[in-house]
Every structure is written in C-alpha cells, then in structure tokens.
Image 1 (spheres, rainbow, N blue to C red):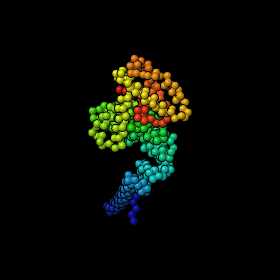
Image 2 (image 1 turned 30 degrees about the horizontal axis):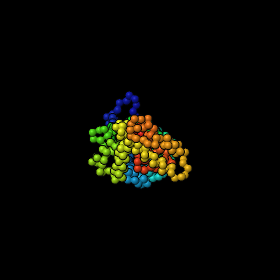
Image 3 (image 1 turned 30 degrees about the vertical axis):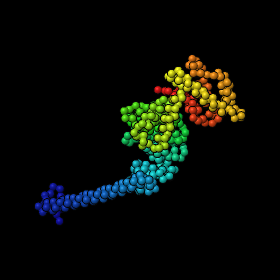
Image 4 (image 1 turned 45 degrees about the vertical axis):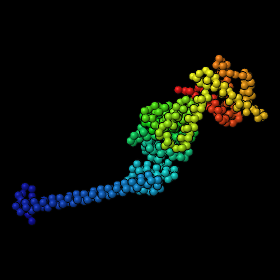
Length: 396
C-alpha cells in the first residue's frame, strides 16, 4: 500500500478515490440533515395539531359552560368551565367559573376564587363587582360598599361609562335595601349628574330617588322630561306623583290631569290608574278648600270660615268622649274659646291678622287631633294635608 506524504503527488486513481470519499461523506451528512429536518417538521406538525386540538376542546367546553350559565344551570356550567380551564387556562374563563360558583350558591368558594383573581388584577372592575355582590349576599355591608366603590374606580372593557352608571344605581339600590337612604341619595345625585340625555335612564334614576325619599330632586328630573315636546307618560305621571307627595297640589293637579288625558293612560295597570285618579281628585279638592291669597278676599274669607267650622267640629268630637285629654288638646280648646263667638266674612276681609290666626289654629287643630284621635277623613284629611306645608300648596 502506498503511503502519501506531504508534498507527494497523487495519482489519478488516488484523486478519484479521495473525491468519492468526500462525496460519500457529504451525502451522508446531507441525508442526516434532511432526516433531522423531516423529524423536526413532523414533530412541529404533531405539536401544532395537538395544540390546535387542545384549544378547540377548551373553546368547546367554554362555550358549553357559557351557554349553561346563561340558561341558569350553574352546576352544569361549573363542570364545563373547569374542563375548559384544564385545556386552556385564561382569566376570562376563571371569572366565568367563579361566577358559576356564585350562582350555584357556593358563595365561600366563589369569594375565595374572586379574591385570588383580584390579587393578580386588583383594578379589574368586573372582579370587584362580583365580590361586592357576594359580600352583599352574605350580609357583609361594609365590605360590599368597599367592593362596589372599587368596582366604580376599576377598569372596564367596552363602555366603562355606562357600566359605572349601572353599578352606581345597583349600589344605590343595595343601600336602599339596607335602609341607608341618605347614602343612596348621594349615589343617585352623582348618577343623575353624570347621566346622558336619555329619558329612560333619567326616569330610572328619578324612580330610585323616590324610593330614597328624595322627592324634590325626583320632581326636578320628571319636570325637565315632561317639558319636552314628546314627553314620556312616565315622566308626566312621575311629576304629578312626586309633587303630590311634596304637598305641591297645584303642580300635582296639572301633571295628573295631563296624565289621565294622555292616550297611553289606558295601557297602565288598573291599580296605577286608580291611584293617579285618586291623587288628582284629592289635589283638586284641596285646591277648592285652600284659602289662597290669590283668590278674591271674600272667597278667601269664606274658605277660612269653612275650614274653621270643620276643624272646630273635629276637636269637639275628639274631646267630647269624657276621657282625659292628651297634653296638646287642652291648650287648643283654650285657644278656640278665645275666638269671637261670631265671625263673618266681612270681619275676616278687614282683618288679615285674624285670618292668619284662625288658619294657624285650624292647622294646629288638625295636626294635634290626628295624633290624639286617629286618622281624619273627608275635609279634615284634606286640611291636614294642607297643614303639613301650606306654603307648598300653590307652588308654581
């Protein structure tokens, strides 16, 4: 065998053999490389196929869970959403699972789940809202209010402006259920100030204001809506109802008359129509009894004398039982005894101070006898309504 040394000259046969050796090595390396590429491609293809199938399964279970949740089947939703999370973990599905737990009455589990979620995203509005609702369900008022406030301050996907208004109204409703009317009124005033120019939304806010005993602000909202060209019947009716509650009977009669005359009035429930008609009749009757300073002096004096006779009969009946009179009544009886034995329209026309003295006695009598002798009826009941706030009766 010939040994090659440095600087030696290769024969043609040796050069061919050397070239063939290099070609075989290169071909082997290329084959190995191609095999590796094929294996990698197959592995990647299988992995992607598995991932796609896993995502598909996760999405399928997620859709099933969401459908069950919307259909009111929370237990079924829990199983489906847990399967979805096993395939594709994500925050949205976790929130839905926690919601399903809450809907299923598993409040403790749901609260723990949402608290865990809040640790990672403390500013998420939806998570804080869910925790507020859970705290409210558990009767934890302090925590519920804190979580509602966190939801209002949190971030929201989509139209956060509308969501925050809805949450504020939900908070107000919760506070009303806890008899925290003043706190509810504050939330409703903020909601009213931020509300868009949408009649439906404003009517909803005004309705909650009525529940919170904020009749004055509710009346303001109703009247602003009732002044529009195509005023909603609910706004006109609401204006009449709240004005009546405030003792502003001139305003109440005007709006209630428009309510009853509205073609849509016939579509209201019978009990609501009955209540509207009764308030209208009562308001009109009060206005007929009320001794307005805008009436002719003679008519005003006649009404004062009529009110005086009604109130005098009331206290006479109330104190004529023979039993000991409650503390306010003896003093009232003494005031009645100090009046002139005979009063005429002419006397009252010429003596405004006597008119005012007589009216105040009538109002004091109706108020005291209502407390001592039970609820009044007929004209006594109307005079008692006037006595609560005489200045409001003819508010413009």
